[in-house]
Structure formats: structure tokens, C-alpha cells
Amino acid sequence: MARLNWALLAGAILAACLSVAAGKVWVPLDAWTAADPRSIIIVELRLPRTVLALTVGAALGVSGAAMQGYLRNPLADPGLFGVSSGAALGAVLSLYFGYAAQAWLLPGFALAGAAATMALLAAIAGRSGSLILFTLAGLILTSIAGSATALAISLAPTPFVASEIVTWLMGALTDRSWNDVEVAVPLIVAGAAILATTGRSLDALTLGEPAARSMGVDPRRLQLAVIVGTAMSVGASVAAAGVIGFVGLIVPHMVRPFVGGRPSATLLPSALGGALLLTVADSLVRIAPTVSELRLGIAMSMLGGPFFLWLLVRMRRGLA
Image 1 (tube, rainbow, N blue to C red):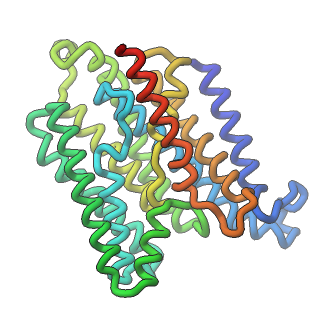
Image 2: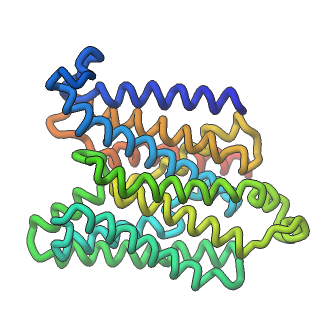
């Protein structure tokens, strides 16, 4: 497993170097100095975008691995909790009411939406600790947030606001700055740290809830840790980059055959794999020969949709 982690880390570093150089205008290595005027492209545009790609990808990857371990469902994704939808709704409301003109307000609204969703989820499912109730509560909150987002789009005061909302919901790292990094990265690191503490409890949960309880696992405390860690990680990611799906579904499946079935063993590789995947994807959408830059959320959906279908077909064959 250590070899896999080192290989993924090396791949993420190489992808970061590619991300800094790649774009419609390539910046060669000899321009990465303060004496070269092109260095401002690196410092003010490419570096914050690369840092966000690495951290957002890591957040989505580790959140997906933790969720799949907690729900014991290989098809679980961070969007299942409703945190992504809640954060998106918060950001949409800031755009709807025109509060996004100030740089900190849109991320603030997105984080508030994620926190509100988290609180509702804990209030609905927190007392019983039931996995079924927890999953159903997440699906209901996702549906409600999605409906409210669609309503905001349909009632947008101007066509420009509606277009701005739809564009933001597509997800992208375009025109991100160090301010976005300052907002998102500390919350993502804190959320990932909380999820990292759940590894042993997730391993015990694979034996079933009664066995996990006998091993000293508190289901409600574990549930709270998963909720808080996912809300912080995914909420901050949505605040910085919009809605980017399927990373938390794809990456754990890609690393799991190399680490075995223990959920704790998939957390770190999933974080590194998510960072690698999203950084490479962001570089590819920038260098793609299109008139305007392809939105990163669309690109990941084009990749994740067929992957999800393949998983369903494989699971059906396994049950047959």
C-alpha cells in the first residue's frame, strides 16, 4: 500500500507541474522566475487554480471513500448526503440576491448551506444511528435542495442572473484566486482530518453494527464524525469550485483493488487519487481545442456517467 501512496503522490506532483504550465498559452519552465513578466500568470492564475484542484480532488476522494465505508455501499457518493446540494443552494441564493459581488460572500453562503444541511441531517437521523434512515434523510435533503435550486433559476430576476447561476452550477476552477484558496483549503484539511480518524471504526463496521458496538464503536459518534468531516470537505469544495461530481465515486473504486477491502486503507489513496484525477482533468479541459473552456463539472460527468453504468452492469452480473 505504501508503494501505491508514493506512486499516487508522485503522479499528483507531476500533474501539478503540468497544471501550472498547461493552458491555451503554455508557460515554459524558464519563465517561472520573478524576472520574467510571464511569471505573473503562474503566481496569480495557475498556482491558486492548481492548489484548489489538488485539495478539492483530495476532499472529494476521501469523502467518497469514507461514505462508501460507512454506508457499506460501493455506489455511495458525497452527493448522497445532500451536502453538495445544500452548499450549491447556498451559493445560488447569493447569486440570486446579488450578494456574490463581494468575494467572500458566495463561499460564505455555500458553507452556510452545507452547515444547514449537516444540521438537518444530524437532527433527522442522529438519534437512532440507523444507516437506512441516514441514507433516506440524505436523499430527501438532496431532492429538496435541488428543487429549491431549480426554483431559484426559474424565478431569477434577470436572464443574466439565471445564466450566472447555471454556469456556476456546472463547476469549474476558472479565474480562482488566492482568496478562494484561503477560504477553502483550511476547511478541507480540517474535514479530511476528521474523516481520517474514522478509519478503525469503519473497519469494525464492515462486520456489522452489533459486532462494531461490541468492539467499542459508538455508531452515533461515528455518524457525527462522517457528517461533519464530509460537510466541511465537500462544502468547502463546492464553495470554491461549484458542483463537481463522481470523483468520490470513481477514485475509491480505482484504488480499492490495490489495498484490499478495509475502508481505512482506502482513505489516503483515495485522497491522493482524487487530487491526481481532478488536477489532470482540469489541465485537459484547459488545453482542449475548444472555443471556450469546457467546464470541469461537465467533463467529470461525461467521465463519471459511463463509469457508474459500468459499475451497475458489473454488480448485476455478480448477482446473477
